[in-house]
Image (cartoon, rainbow, N blue to C red):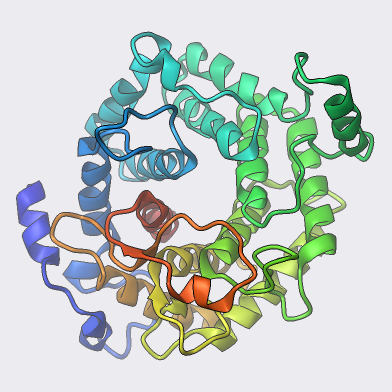
Length: 378
Protein backbone atom coordinates (compact mmCIF):
# COMPACT_ATOMS: atom_id res chain seq x y z
CA UNK A 1 0.00 0.00 0.00
CA UNK A 2 2.77 2.44 0.92
CA UNK A 3 4.64 1.67 -2.31
CA UNK A 4 1.44 2.29 -4.25
CA UNK A 5 0.91 5.64 -2.54
CA UNK A 6 4.47 6.68 -3.18
CA UNK A 7 4.05 5.93 -6.87
CA UNK A 8 0.96 8.16 -6.92
CA UNK A 9 2.88 11.11 -5.54
CA UNK A 10 6.05 10.58 -7.55
CA UNK A 11 6.88 13.42 -9.86
CA UNK A 12 4.09 15.77 -8.82
CA UNK A 13 4.79 19.32 -9.98
CA UNK A 14 3.84 22.61 -8.43
CA UNK A 15 1.46 23.08 -11.36
CA UNK A 16 -0.78 20.42 -9.79
CA UNK A 17 -3.19 23.21 -8.92
CA UNK A 18 -4.18 23.33 -12.57
CA UNK A 19 -5.78 19.91 -12.28
CA UNK A 20 -8.30 21.00 -9.62
CA UNK A 21 -11.73 21.72 -11.07
CA UNK A 22 -12.39 25.44 -11.02
CA UNK A 23 -15.64 24.99 -9.09
CA UNK A 24 -13.90 23.22 -6.21
CA UNK A 25 -12.50 26.24 -4.43
CA UNK A 26 -12.78 24.54 -1.07
CA UNK A 27 -10.71 22.51 1.38
CA UNK A 28 -12.49 19.20 0.85
CA UNK A 29 -12.32 18.13 -2.80
CA UNK A 30 -8.82 17.27 -4.01
CA UNK A 31 -7.13 15.52 -6.92
CA UNK A 32 -6.01 12.11 -5.67
CA UNK A 33 -2.34 13.06 -5.52
CA UNK A 34 -3.20 15.93 -3.14
CA UNK A 35 -5.71 13.96 -1.07
CA UNK A 36 -4.75 14.65 2.57
CA UNK A 37 -5.36 11.02 3.57
CA UNK A 38 -3.07 9.75 0.81
CA UNK A 39 -0.33 12.23 1.61
CA UNK A 40 -0.73 11.68 5.35
CA UNK A 41 -0.20 7.93 5.10
CA UNK A 42 2.93 8.48 3.08
CA UNK A 43 4.52 11.14 5.27
CA UNK A 44 3.55 9.47 8.55
CA UNK A 45 4.99 6.16 7.40
CA UNK A 46 8.16 7.97 6.41
CA UNK A 47 8.48 9.19 9.98
CA UNK A 48 7.86 5.74 11.43
CA UNK A 49 10.67 4.37 9.28
CA UNK A 50 13.11 7.17 10.14
CA UNK A 51 15.76 6.86 12.87
CA UNK A 52 16.27 9.56 15.45
CA UNK A 53 18.08 12.15 13.36
CA UNK A 54 19.34 14.74 15.80
CA UNK A 55 22.91 14.30 14.57
CA UNK A 56 24.43 12.99 11.39
CA UNK A 57 26.21 9.61 11.53
CA UNK A 58 28.58 8.49 12.85
CA UNK A 59 27.91 10.80 15.82
CA UNK A 60 25.14 9.34 18.01
CA UNK A 61 22.22 11.59 18.95
CA UNK A 62 22.61 13.32 22.31
CA UNK A 63 18.91 13.91 22.82
CA UNK A 64 15.68 14.14 20.88
CA UNK A 65 15.34 17.57 19.26
CA UNK A 66 12.28 19.67 18.56
CA UNK A 67 11.94 18.95 14.79
CA UNK A 68 11.49 15.25 15.56
CA UNK A 69 9.12 16.08 18.41
CA UNK A 70 6.97 18.25 16.14
CA UNK A 71 6.87 15.58 13.43
CA UNK A 72 6.00 12.93 16.00
CA UNK A 73 3.15 15.09 17.24
CA UNK A 74 1.91 15.58 13.69
CA UNK A 75 2.00 11.83 13.04
CA UNK A 76 0.04 11.21 16.26
CA UNK A 77 -2.63 13.71 15.24
CA UNK A 78 -2.87 12.04 11.84
CA UNK A 79 -3.22 8.62 13.49
CA UNK A 80 -6.07 10.02 15.57
CA UNK A 81 -7.94 11.76 12.75
CA UNK A 82 -7.54 8.80 10.39
CA UNK A 83 -8.43 6.30 13.14
CA UNK A 84 -5.31 4.34 12.26
CA UNK A 85 -4.74 2.11 15.28
CA UNK A 86 -1.76 0.38 13.67
CA UNK A 87 -0.01 3.73 13.17
CA UNK A 88 -0.74 4.77 16.75
CA UNK A 89 0.76 1.49 17.97
CA UNK A 90 3.93 2.09 15.94
CA UNK A 91 4.27 5.64 17.24
CA UNK A 92 3.73 4.41 20.79
CA UNK A 93 6.32 1.66 20.46
CA UNK A 94 8.80 4.20 19.06
CA UNK A 95 8.45 6.08 22.35
CA UNK A 96 8.68 3.20 24.82
CA UNK A 97 12.53 2.91 24.79
CA UNK A 98 12.70 6.38 26.39
CA UNK A 99 11.71 4.69 29.63
CA UNK A 100 14.55 2.18 29.32
CA UNK A 101 17.26 1.68 26.70
CA UNK A 102 16.99 5.21 25.23
CA UNK A 103 16.41 7.04 28.49
CA UNK A 104 19.57 9.05 27.83
CA UNK A 105 17.90 10.62 24.77
CA UNK A 106 15.17 12.30 26.80
CA UNK A 107 16.12 16.00 26.91
CA UNK A 108 16.34 17.94 30.14
CA UNK A 109 13.48 20.49 30.26
CA UNK A 110 15.73 23.50 30.76
CA UNK A 111 15.17 25.29 27.47
CA UNK A 112 12.13 25.93 25.27
CA UNK A 113 13.51 23.76 22.46
CA UNK A 114 13.92 20.85 24.90
CA UNK A 115 10.73 21.40 26.88
CA UNK A 116 8.44 20.93 23.88
CA UNK A 117 9.38 17.22 24.03
CA UNK A 118 6.68 16.92 26.70
CA UNK A 119 4.01 17.45 24.04
CA UNK A 120 4.49 13.93 22.69
CA UNK A 121 3.91 11.95 25.91
CA UNK A 122 0.93 14.18 26.72
CA UNK A 123 -0.60 13.46 23.31
CA UNK A 124 0.17 9.77 23.76
CA UNK A 125 -1.71 9.90 27.06
CA UNK A 126 -4.67 11.57 25.35
CA UNK A 127 -4.91 8.74 22.87
CA UNK A 128 -3.85 5.72 24.96
CA UNK A 129 -4.82 6.76 28.53
CA UNK A 130 -1.52 5.33 29.76
CA UNK A 131 -0.77 7.39 32.88
CA UNK A 132 2.97 6.83 32.53
CA UNK A 133 2.92 9.14 29.51
CA UNK A 134 0.95 11.74 31.43
CA UNK A 135 3.43 11.78 34.31
CA UNK A 136 6.39 12.29 32.02
CA UNK A 137 4.71 15.00 29.98
CA UNK A 138 3.51 16.96 33.00
CA UNK A 139 7.03 17.06 34.39
CA UNK A 140 8.02 19.03 31.30
CA UNK A 141 4.99 21.33 31.46
CA UNK A 142 5.52 22.13 35.14
CA UNK A 143 9.26 22.63 34.65
CA UNK A 144 8.61 25.62 32.37
CA UNK A 145 7.39 27.55 35.40
CA UNK A 146 9.80 26.06 37.97
CA UNK A 147 13.41 27.28 38.17
CA UNK A 148 15.90 24.37 38.23
CA UNK A 149 17.01 23.92 41.82
CA UNK A 150 20.67 23.53 40.86
CA UNK A 151 20.85 26.87 39.02
CA UNK A 152 23.38 29.40 40.40
CA UNK A 153 21.78 32.10 42.56
CA UNK A 154 22.58 34.86 40.06
CA UNK A 155 20.80 32.88 37.37
CA UNK A 156 17.84 32.22 39.68
CA UNK A 157 17.51 35.95 40.32
CA UNK A 158 17.36 36.71 36.59
CA UNK A 159 14.81 33.95 36.07
CA UNK A 160 12.67 35.12 38.97
CA UNK A 161 12.09 38.45 37.25
CA UNK A 162 10.12 36.61 34.57
CA UNK A 163 8.17 34.50 37.05
CA UNK A 164 7.19 37.65 38.95
CA UNK A 165 5.50 38.85 35.74
CA UNK A 166 3.63 35.58 35.27
CA UNK A 167 6.02 34.45 32.54
CA UNK A 168 8.07 31.30 32.22
CA UNK A 169 11.67 31.61 33.31
CA UNK A 170 12.51 30.30 29.81
CA UNK A 171 11.28 33.57 28.25
CA UNK A 172 13.73 35.05 25.74
CA UNK A 173 11.50 36.79 23.11
CA UNK A 174 12.51 34.58 20.21
CA UNK A 175 9.77 33.91 17.69
CA UNK A 176 9.93 30.10 17.84
CA UNK A 177 9.24 30.25 21.59
CA UNK A 178 5.59 30.87 20.90
CA UNK A 179 5.17 27.38 19.57
CA UNK A 180 7.52 25.62 21.98
CA UNK A 181 6.02 27.19 25.12
CA UNK A 182 2.35 27.58 24.31
CA UNK A 183 2.08 24.17 22.62
CA UNK A 184 3.20 22.33 25.75
CA UNK A 185 1.07 24.41 28.11
CA UNK A 186 -2.01 24.03 25.88
CA UNK A 187 -1.55 20.28 25.85
CA UNK A 188 -1.16 20.23 29.64
CA UNK A 189 -4.50 22.03 29.90
CA UNK A 190 -6.14 19.54 27.56
CA UNK A 191 -5.07 16.53 29.63
CA UNK A 192 -5.61 18.02 33.11
CA UNK A 193 -8.45 20.49 32.63
CA UNK A 194 -6.57 22.93 34.88
CA UNK A 195 -6.95 26.51 33.65
CA UNK A 196 -3.59 27.66 35.01
CA UNK A 197 -1.79 26.02 32.09
CA UNK A 198 -3.76 27.59 29.27
CA UNK A 199 -4.14 30.93 31.06
CA UNK A 200 -0.41 31.33 31.56
CA UNK A 201 0.21 30.28 27.96
CA UNK A 202 -2.17 33.00 26.78
CA UNK A 203 -0.51 35.59 29.02
CA UNK A 204 2.89 34.60 27.68
CA UNK A 205 1.66 34.85 24.10
CA UNK A 206 0.16 38.29 24.61
CA UNK A 207 3.37 39.64 26.15
CA UNK A 208 5.37 38.29 23.21
CA UNK A 209 2.94 39.80 20.72
CA UNK A 210 3.01 43.18 22.44
CA UNK A 211 6.81 43.04 22.49
CA UNK A 212 7.84 41.72 19.08
CA UNK A 213 4.99 41.85 16.52
CA UNK A 214 5.63 44.50 13.87
CA UNK A 215 3.10 46.90 12.40
CA UNK A 216 2.62 44.70 9.33
CA UNK A 217 1.69 41.74 11.53
CA UNK A 218 4.95 39.86 10.91
CA UNK A 219 7.97 39.25 13.13
CA UNK A 220 11.71 39.84 12.84
CA UNK A 221 13.85 36.78 13.42
CA UNK A 222 15.33 38.68 16.37
CA UNK A 223 15.87 42.34 17.35
CA UNK A 224 19.41 42.09 15.99
CA UNK A 225 18.28 40.18 12.86
CA UNK A 226 15.67 42.49 11.29
CA UNK A 227 14.42 40.09 8.64
CA UNK A 228 11.04 38.46 8.17
CA UNK A 229 12.42 34.94 8.01
CA UNK A 230 9.84 32.43 6.78
CA UNK A 231 10.04 29.54 9.24
CA UNK A 232 10.52 31.83 12.22
CA UNK A 233 7.25 33.52 11.36
CA UNK A 234 5.79 30.08 10.78
CA UNK A 235 6.36 29.15 14.42
CA UNK A 236 4.40 32.23 15.47
CA UNK A 237 1.55 31.46 13.06
CA UNK A 238 1.34 27.83 14.18
CA UNK A 239 1.71 28.76 17.84
CA UNK A 240 -1.16 31.24 17.75
CA UNK A 241 -3.29 28.70 15.88
CA UNK A 242 -2.66 25.94 18.41
CA UNK A 243 -3.24 28.25 21.34
CA UNK A 244 -6.47 29.72 19.99
CA UNK A 245 -7.75 26.22 19.22
CA UNK A 246 -7.46 25.28 22.90
CA UNK A 247 -8.09 28.66 24.56
CA UNK A 248 -11.48 29.01 26.29
CA UNK A 249 -13.61 31.81 24.91
CA UNK A 250 -13.80 33.52 28.31
CA UNK A 251 -10.04 34.03 28.54
CA UNK A 252 -9.52 37.80 28.74
CA UNK A 253 -6.46 37.69 26.45
CA UNK A 254 -8.23 35.83 23.66
CA UNK A 255 -9.58 38.87 21.72
CA UNK A 256 -6.13 40.50 21.54
CA UNK A 257 -4.42 37.26 20.49
CA UNK A 258 -7.07 36.64 17.84
CA UNK A 259 -6.63 40.18 16.52
CA UNK A 260 -2.87 39.65 16.23
CA UNK A 261 -3.45 36.34 14.47
CA UNK A 262 -5.78 37.99 11.93
CA UNK A 263 -3.29 40.80 11.39
CA UNK A 264 -0.59 38.27 10.56
CA UNK A 265 -2.83 36.27 8.23
CA UNK A 266 -3.75 39.45 6.31
CA UNK A 267 -0.06 40.15 5.78
CA UNK A 268 0.59 36.58 4.63
CA UNK A 269 -2.22 36.92 2.13
CA UNK A 270 -0.45 39.95 0.70
CA UNK A 271 2.90 38.16 0.37
CA UNK A 272 1.75 34.79 -1.01
CA UNK A 273 3.55 34.16 -4.28
CA UNK A 274 2.03 33.25 -7.60
CA UNK A 275 3.14 29.64 -7.13
CA UNK A 276 1.23 29.44 -3.83
CA UNK A 277 4.16 29.48 -1.41
CA UNK A 278 6.05 32.09 0.57
CA UNK A 279 9.69 33.04 0.40
CA UNK A 280 12.63 32.30 2.66
CA UNK A 281 12.33 36.01 3.45
CA UNK A 282 8.61 36.69 3.30
CA UNK A 283 8.74 40.23 1.93
CA UNK A 284 11.63 39.68 -0.48
CA UNK A 285 10.40 38.34 -3.85
CA UNK A 286 13.96 37.52 -4.88
CA UNK A 287 14.32 34.96 -2.07
CA UNK A 288 13.68 31.30 -2.84
CA UNK A 289 10.44 29.45 -2.16
CA UNK A 290 10.72 27.79 1.26
CA UNK A 291 8.39 24.95 2.25
CA UNK A 292 8.59 24.59 6.04
CA UNK A 293 7.46 28.14 6.75
CA UNK A 294 4.93 27.91 3.92
CA UNK A 295 3.49 24.72 5.44
CA UNK A 296 3.19 26.39 8.84
CA UNK A 297 1.36 29.33 7.26
CA UNK A 298 -0.89 26.91 5.40
CA UNK A 299 -1.71 25.13 8.65
CA UNK A 300 -2.54 28.43 10.32
CA UNK A 301 -4.77 29.48 7.41
CA UNK A 302 -6.62 26.16 7.26
CA UNK A 303 -7.17 26.27 11.02
CA UNK A 304 -8.48 29.82 10.81
CA UNK A 305 -10.94 29.00 8.04
CA UNK A 306 -12.10 25.80 9.77
CA UNK A 307 -12.73 27.62 13.06
CA UNK A 308 -14.39 30.65 11.54
CA UNK A 309 -11.66 33.08 12.59
CA UNK A 310 -11.04 33.98 8.94
CA UNK A 311 -13.52 34.80 6.21
CA UNK A 312 -13.83 31.57 4.25
CA UNK A 313 -14.49 33.22 0.89
CA UNK A 314 -11.35 35.31 1.24
CA UNK A 315 -8.89 32.82 2.71
CA UNK A 316 -9.98 29.41 1.42
CA UNK A 317 -8.48 30.01 -2.06
CA UNK A 318 -5.19 31.07 -0.43
CA UNK A 319 -5.01 27.95 1.75
CA UNK A 320 -6.01 25.67 -1.13
CA UNK A 321 -3.44 27.13 -3.48
CA UNK A 322 -0.74 26.74 -0.83
CA UNK A 323 -1.58 23.10 -0.09
CA UNK A 324 -1.56 22.14 -3.76
CA UNK A 325 1.81 23.85 -4.17
CA UNK A 326 3.29 22.12 -1.11
CA UNK A 327 2.27 18.66 -2.33
CA UNK A 328 4.23 19.35 -5.48
CA UNK A 329 7.44 19.38 -3.42
CA UNK A 330 6.87 15.92 -1.86
CA UNK A 331 8.82 13.13 -3.53
CA UNK A 332 7.96 9.45 -3.86
CA UNK A 333 9.68 8.68 -0.55
CA UNK A 334 7.45 11.09 1.34
CA UNK A 335 10.13 13.75 1.82
CA UNK A 336 9.44 17.42 1.16
CA UNK A 337 12.08 19.52 -0.59
CA UNK A 338 13.16 23.17 -0.26
CA UNK A 339 13.33 23.12 3.54
CA UNK A 340 15.63 25.72 5.06
CA UNK A 341 18.32 24.14 7.20
CA UNK A 342 18.50 24.94 10.92
CA UNK A 343 19.12 28.66 11.16
CA UNK A 344 20.45 30.85 13.93
CA UNK A 345 19.83 34.57 13.82
CA UNK A 346 22.27 36.84 12.00
CA UNK A 347 22.15 40.49 10.95
CA UNK A 348 23.04 39.65 7.35
CA UNK A 349 20.55 39.60 4.48
CA UNK A 350 22.70 37.33 2.31
CA UNK A 351 23.06 34.83 5.14
CA UNK A 352 19.36 33.97 4.86
CA UNK A 353 19.42 33.69 1.08
CA UNK A 354 22.43 31.37 1.23
CA UNK A 355 20.95 28.87 3.71
CA UNK A 356 20.98 25.29 2.43
CA UNK A 357 17.80 23.83 1.00
CA UNK A 358 17.22 20.35 2.40
CA UNK A 359 14.91 17.48 1.48
CA UNK A 360 13.25 15.41 4.19
CA UNK A 361 14.32 17.67 7.04
CA UNK A 362 11.80 17.28 9.86
CA UNK A 363 11.36 21.04 10.09
CA UNK A 364 9.36 20.53 6.90
CA UNK A 365 7.89 17.08 7.52
CA UNK A 366 6.18 18.23 10.72
CA UNK A 367 3.97 21.04 9.38
CA UNK A 368 2.90 18.93 6.40
CA UNK A 369 1.35 16.54 8.93
CA UNK A 370 -0.23 19.45 10.82
CA UNK A 371 -1.83 20.64 7.58
CA UNK A 372 -3.21 17.18 6.93
CA UNK A 373 -4.76 16.97 10.39
CA UNK A 374 -6.33 20.41 9.94
CA UNK A 375 -7.71 19.48 6.51
CA UNK A 376 -9.23 16.21 7.73
CA UNK A 377 -10.66 17.61 10.96
CA UNK A 378 -14.43 18.04 10.77
